[in-house]
Image 1 (tube, each protein chain N blue to C red):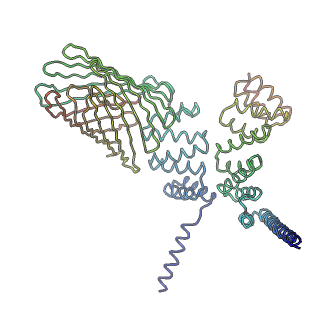
Image 2 (cartoon, rainbow over the protein chains, first blue to last red):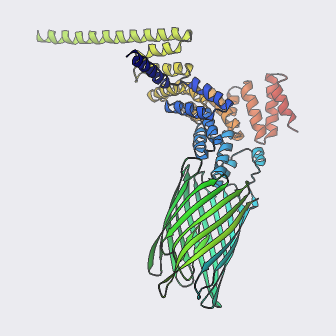
Image 3 (cartoon, rainbow over the protein chains, first blue to last red):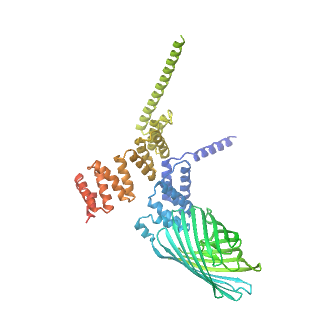
Length: 380
Length: 206
């Protein structure tokens, strides 16, 4: 009985101690000591306890943000640094770490939005100039294999160049070439693509693109033009966007409207999901296309991304209208896996396999195509 | 007879009301007195408790004093809350806004500090303290044209105020007005001979 009472008393006192209200001074001094000693978990615990008791200040948020940053939880770090910025919009430490958070979450527009606000000497130190004519280049090669006699195996090659026109404005240009023989007629398709991206705020960006396709089949020309616009927002782990495009292939005009949503889950694996739904209207036809992407880090610098796309993809465009699926045989189902291997800070190798179901429209005959891609992106 | 009864009742009511008012004033004065004693001995928690025993959310004086005592006790969030209540009760009183600036500065919420100074200047545009500190905030943010405007107001009112003259001189220098800056650095040297800041400023002007 006594033992029970003693245990109960100890338990009550422990609970009482744990629930002891924290003061500004204790929150400030403990988190500062934790910061100096590198006790990140304790810093986060005490910091969050203080915030729970309505004790919130710039240094506290900066310290918690830094603790999460060291633990590589860049989204939570970003959230805390953004709160620190609401106390002092001109703090250069906060801005610098928001820049790094942007880089580490793959949100370069966000990073450059904050780097613009840093003093000139710091921008130079970070090697972030306003105008960079050659910011990044990328190359891509794709080979598709099918078993049909009437269709050759198509090939696609593409080169891209990214230019920083300013801290918040980028221009991406790409040239590509697609080739396939269909029923002895050679289809050749050189393309040009340009995309302007403007970061209106740290969380809101606008995209506008133009895509030209110089299609020729058996000597006859069918030039295609697409214009595209999108508005997207990224608030911490969540992203949301709407887009629309108009495509004229010299025979008919197609309009596409799309909605996109994504989420990055907490944790070191960095699981992320992106969904999009698009509606294509044209040539008396109305089709819905659904796409789902799920990705995660599989090993240190290696990320894998699985995807599935449902619906008839005739004249469908994705990746901000970089790819237009205008093949004579529309894809009716597609699923695949992409691997991203980050070699240091500058080079990314990309490998992709897609399983595609395609349809010959006249006969409604379905066939299977295997698609293999390889690419490299080099940030200069 | 009926009239006498009514009058007597009214007089009694007034007397009871007056007595209650006197008692409440007396307990308020006593609580304030005890809170001053506790503050003098740096016993801020006791000082706060004394006032909380007579707390009235609609009383400006209690709220502003609790704002101050909580600031001294480093209870900054509570302090800001009491100052905000005081501001709501007397929106044209600038003392509560100046008070509020202290805990806001302690937690480095410079956006709200700036907002309070701007509110003070809306009420009292010539206020030298608000003009000076607002000038310092925007100067630290390298907005030298704006800081010059705030410091200039003070220099017009108090041409011999060294702090404002020297800050105005540096603001003019960094906003590419070296000739105006030169005059002001010389003025600073008249107020404070051999002043190192003014001499350093003059060295930067060709």
